[in-house]
Image (cartoon, rainbow, N blue to C red; front, side, top):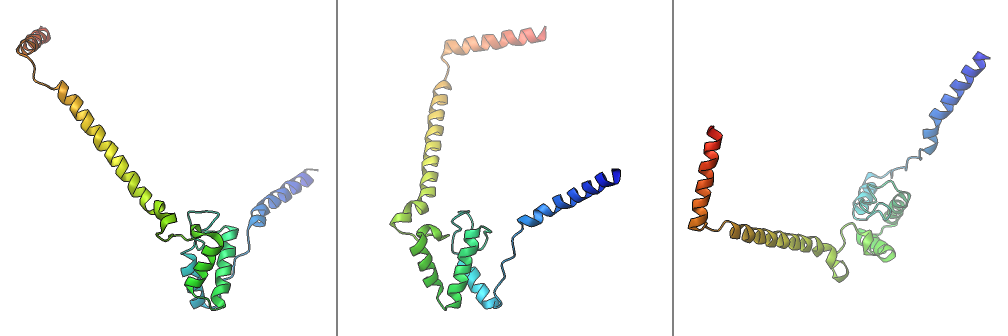
Length: 164
């Protein structure tokens, strides 16, 4: 009975160790032609993964990115140029597919937006610093003779307390 439960435990452990292998995908074969693969990777570096959105299809492991890269590979084999392939992808998916979108009216905010936000942020910071300086400047105004005498008297009294 003990032997049976030990064997069951070993069998269960072996089965559990096999689970990660079930999730593994088959490696995508590289092109046999290194020149072709270099061209495919150059084009893939220009196209954004629509699933990840912050990676190129060359960097992404998403299924869509793998499919798009395979499509690019097929188009390169057919003899299409880089511009033709990118134009096809833009026509099909829009300018968002380009990792570096072109400067035009529809993408102008993407290019200018970060600089505009930086400018607005710096302007707000400068205005706040000036406002703070004006507020503290008013408080630092010169004391009247009465206030100065009173301050001197308070400081002398404080020194005498500390000595005793």
